[in-house]
Length: 428
Image (cartoon, rainbow, N blue to C red; front, side, top):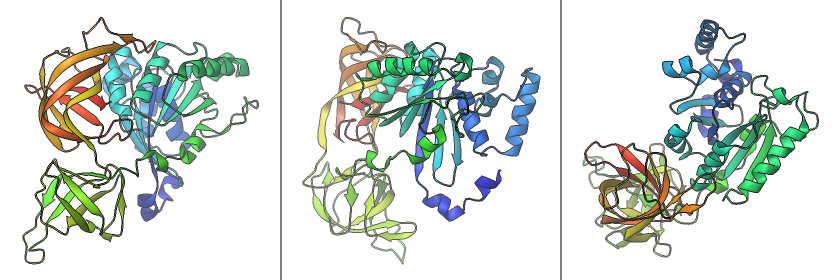
């Protein structure tokens, strides 16, 4: 790998802040090229990968190295010049670690875009400077808002094809500002770029002296994300009860899981659901030793002062700040399967670490993603549709709204016969 990547000390790398971001946009807006340029200019591509990309570019007759091939790993993608599946890439600079989800632009792959964006802190939406804001721009911005992505960067790409004119950039910015006023995204930034030539990706462009903002990489390195997590509502879904029953840990009983919100400290009073029993935190343990406090999204083992009945799928919270609980749940659902959603249909569900089943009681409406209007007279929910539904579960869930906590506010629906994930739900 490059000297820059090797210069990052291993311990410093582990301690670095991690930013997950996704790319989206219409077909051929240059998403894969942008990621390739970002990795290439930040010197984060392995030599053997670069050799494969150069070889593939020659076979395809490209005049120069096609950086889009860095992320388009499937043969079908390289042959067609499109992105089909979500491609994940990892890289780091001296300032931050990154996980990139390069998602497809085609309408029929909207479900893949939802998958890639579901864990992202930030979304990059590309717009072709020649075409401006189009249907897919609005679709992907709405999905980013629906998934509660707090930060969005609108990259106006292919500025080289409009002679780097400021007017083209300003028009697109104004059009998107008008649409985004309907969305729940507070931090939106605008950057004019040329992914092909590298303008304003890693280095400042010499062709756009009228733009005085930051480059894309600088924005990614410095966007503030630590306050995005919910540090108020303490939630620990129990993934596993640990009882070693060894001589050294004969009486040890710990509750392992990933903290989805809030802060826990030894001595804190806690309550377990569904039992409702209370206790106090005795210790918080990790593989590196005990902690004086733990917070989202840390994975820990918690021990309590009392031996109360807690098992996988239960929730540990604070008595004065409890999650909602119930079996009648309203969701915004993105349908991910070719088989349409069945009103009255029965599905398996997974919520945090809790498994159960549900029945779809009602389809309230479908969303026109392009206008954000509610379609109440069309209850047919098919692949890539987004709708509001009501379900009743066989077991009580302990949840928060998705807007409040992405971890405890999300549900997946599963086909009981094929075990395919058919729907991604966000609790209202």
